[in-house]
Length: 225
Length: 225
DNA sequence: ACAGCGGAAATTGCATACAATTTGGCGCTC
DNA sequence: GAGCGCCAAATTGTATGCAATTTCCGCTGT
Image (tube, rainbow over all chains, first blue to last red; front, side):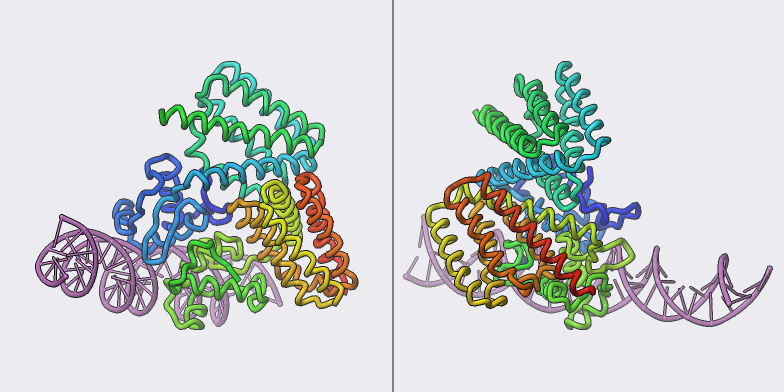
């Protein structure tokens, strides 16, 4: 998974960047739980390097929001309070909607055709009821919309939000009926984008992503019980 | 000016963070022109420190988008191509509009009252025709709207975009008539937010910020001639 | 004159060493 | 027994040194 700004993980990655990717992966995988302390020496020993590249990697991750650093207090995996999580979900909904809005206005005919093809493939997956395959296709679907906005800063930020929320969304498609429900919502989004209807695309996407949040809340409530 | 993520520039700044602020200031002031090479040794000597904190500061700034780093090739001040600049202006318009939308929905009565007071004060400044005072008040006005969205991630990102575009917007209020024009647009934004009309707030803000871009283009065209 | 080609200088990447600050525990006092 | 201060260990912050890569300059050959 792409973790860093595109221009920073070229084909010739430095130790710092490989470390940043590795640590980010650990966080997104759940191997490093939110709140975990990120000890520089331990990380350095684990990866067989010195503290210098570890520190630089941590600094990058801190700016991306994945970890929190406080001077002389060390770094910890960002632990979102329920309020912060709520903010992140709202932010993501707004950003997804904004991207959908721009996509409706600026997608090329080819972009639109591809989006439609992607959506149709997902309809099949939803009917087959394969959560993992659907989840992967879902990521690609949303990424296609970010790209269709033709605006690098917005796409990058939105993708970052999606990544940060990944750990909290992982299991949503295992909820009963969520798959076909999600697919129906996508239908509305795709229709609006293909029609070039910016307002409808915005509204449909906000609706869709807000329901993702609801699904998360319902899911975590069940798991807590 | 606040440059870093809030939790990273505590009251006990490390050298790295002071450097990041200093370098960022230099860029935003224009002391470091876009495209300038940021030599680690020179920066270290200038600030009387070693290369280590310089490198860490550069990494932070790279993630913020203010500079570009390529492995083993060093860092340069981000030079936005005209296309990238256009993307940034569009992104900023969308983000400002999104914040305005959320502000219309979630500002408290106190927030609204303060926003109105700010706007009325700016009307006076516009009438007086003081570009510098108006520019400062304008920053505060927009920041108040970000804050009113009550969403830290969005507010932070929007502020970041505003900062990155600062160098290109600095002189806009010296354009003939831009001051009162800006104030009129603010009027529409404020009215929509106070009325809690999310759609109108979004539209009014997009309109306002898009005109800022137009003003910049007109201004730079004049200066190029 | 110009393209291609060493090779030295400059610059970045990483490791190690040291300084400064925080943290945890120990004994002491009340 | 609870709270407070103090010292030691752990951890972060910064400096310095060395290795690796890039850059730039002069050279050669056609």
